[in-house]
Image (tube, rainbow, N blue to C red; front, side, top):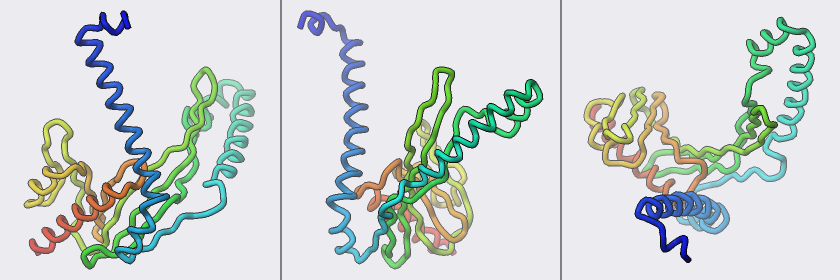
Amino acid sequence: MDLIATWDWRAWTLAVLFVGVVGWHLWRYLAALAFRHLLLGGLLRRHGWQADLPGGGDGGRAAFDQRERQRRGQAWELLRQGRRGIREGYRTGVFGKTQASGWHGELTVTGTFRGRAFVAAQTRRTELTNPGSGSNRRTRRRASLELHGAFPMFDARVGKLSGRVRGAPPGLESLLRSRRFRVLRSDGGTLSVPLGPRLRRGRLLAGLAHLSAVADRLEERR
């Protein structure tokens, strides 16, 4: 209690920021779990969508472990060759600090929204970093949303601080600037936005509304 009583405004500011950041990450994690295990079924029935949750398997971890054992063996063999082998190891990436498996699907939601087909996918991969003190394994996740249609190709980004829109077709700047999705890509057949590390109900529905508004605006400009 004496320690807390002696805190000044800087210490309290740091404490509040720390609690806020931890709470924000915890909320995102719990929201993703609730979506997958509690809310997904009702959302699918309400909209007539479908979901694919790959069961069984290890997400490619066994194959990654086997490849990592082979890489380590190759690394030791190159080290035995001396300077020439070391140069070859760095050139080919054998001595790279980060090794990663391929991306494997964890959850895929498909259906139609306002007459357009979409695919929302959550994937993961195993990464292994090798700092000087040892190895560190982690699972990395990412989620994305794609809306299908015929669109011009572009790669639009919104600055985090300035709010400036770059790479967007004329007439979309104000629409993109008012949204929380700061990256929007089109390959000509799909509009796509990243949804963070995991699929969440609110993020998914907001992303669908955002992409549909962009698609409507692009069709009006034809």
